[in-house]
Length: 151
Image (cartoon, rainbow, N blue to C red; front, side):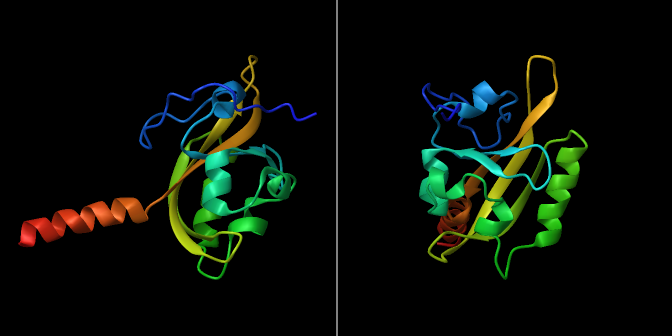
């Protein structure tokens, strides 16, 4: 039985806001793409939410047990930046980066990923969490703003 359920409303919808710090917070429903992985190498996916499925094209069943590298990395993915994220996580720090990834159908997309640790009541790290946001929306807003200023 899958122990992860996205049943409540996840209030932290601001991409710049705090990351979830507990498994319970990370499990809650949100419009942000969330992936939860094991905290040990090779960091296999334990759970994804509906927003992640929509962004990346993989279902929960397809993603479970795989790694993010297996599913999303491709020729233009900055593996060094992805490795730096993992290094920070292993040292207990939150981290973020902009990465080029690839959805299931091969669609290339840029996303801002923010990663952090999830801890249990004893403050032991149990999982890692990633919150992904496709950045084309932000780029379009910036471009529209620049075009408005030029007119």
